[in-house]
Image (cartoon, rainbow, N blue to C red):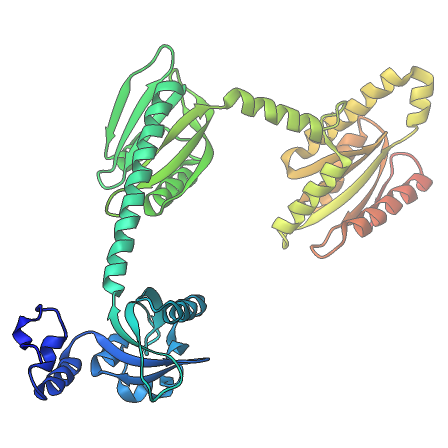
Length: 435
């Protein structure tokens, strides 16, 4: 035999020259090395022929806990990684290449860990199936660090993008730009309007909102809650509210906002833009009112009235409601004798009298022609009768009145009131029938 010391330090033939003690040395190495080492037979399943103690430690279990896995070592691998790992092992054996793969496996306590396996096919004459020698390392900590680093890099990238967007917005968008810093409770406004390009910083912004009513009292609670929510988690959205303007008074504004995380993962700032939408808001409300209201009388169209009545009752199930159907007396004769224009004046005056007598205590709608409907809330029946009589002193009509209980269907309520109104018609002019 060639002198063993003449071989390179990494040449395994140096071990042959050291004598029979080499096997004992290698066994001690297998017992004490921190990496999991094993011999595995490959068939329909992967069968463990030998593993060292560090193999169990690596997988987070004891030898006893792992015994049932000997015949199928891939049974602990998460389902998404099993097929790819198995195919990679078969390719490695077929091509006589080195196995080098990362996969996820479930530990005994149910946690998912990341593992790196390196191995090589080996030939064991006593076995018919292929065998490979593998070294297993737990790389969970490294993977978690990599993931945290990637998240941080993504956050920094997103932050840079947001900052660039903000700079572009500040340079081009008209309105009021803002950035709020939750930790410092500091708000910075940047006015970007033709005659106003100033910058304003507000320290202790939460307290400032309480001392100076920038937001209308009806909207301040929702406004504050929205700001607090945006400071607690990453989100974006918009909110409409009434805000003070120079010269006094309130106007409708919309705030578009987005919260952005800093490099620690916390919400570092909430930024966005404030825009005056008062004119468009008022126009939209006027259009909505025209769509909901009868053009002649300004009371609700019948379908809108019915919807609002149902909401009225649903929101106060224990209140007292009376539903009334009203129909003018001899209205056809009025139209025939004086013309439709005069008839329209009568209809308009009648609706105005109903609004005057019942005001905000009820929902009033025009059912069609000279027929109207109304719903009262928390008005005693005697008072309903008295108010209807006041209107009858101005113009003659008949009415049917029924109580609307919470669980009554609107169709049934209308049917009863309509029938009561027609019964009043048969008894004479200016009649009132309460059922």
